[in-house]
Length: 313
Image (tube, rainbow, N blue to C red; front, top):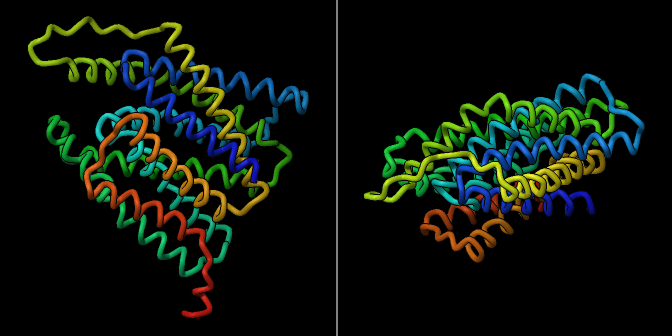
């Protein structure tokens, strides 16, 4: 259970550091790149300390690298989604991607579904349009298009859900490679992809800087902020990200995926929503609040076993 708590703490720290860095788009992607590169260094040191080397086994390299590439592209998605819906809505949608590894655990590894799990899946699908409604309206008002929010949600499910499924697949491969090896390849790939996507990230940050400049005010020249602030946030982001990823993969070696993902996600949604409301003063429309409640209920039901199988069986 300790690893689940560490995973949750790392995720909460990660999203709030990212949320703070998002206040200045000029330094957001600098923070992300520093975070992934520093996490790769931490993972390498940890693996060398524990095992005297880093495993080259294919499952660790392949699934770790896939999750790393997905992490960087999700960082680009998060940049847009936070501006539209806030951190709570963004994080909740991201956490609902547990549908992918949960369904994968049922179809691929024959983990037995329960009626509660089906109810949870239905609740998550019901919550999605409610969560995205307010953000979609903002996208239309900002002339970004009504298609943007649905596209971002689909990207989240494909990238983050697929990455979590890859973590489960690595564990099921039962190779000699440890979670520390897996996270090294994860963050090495994330750091490399942050450099590959740098021109795109720079263009996104520049557009956001120009878009948020007040009307009638001459915009200040855009320049990426490679500063102690962005680097410091990046180091904190890297430590939190490495900690949560290592704890998650370790937890999957102890508990079933159908237990780990829903429990962590439900706790995460509740904590981040509370922090977003109290600390960041994010205000939600009534339908968004309803969507958050239904989503939290859904991720709990996905894992809950009330014995309904005996009633409906």
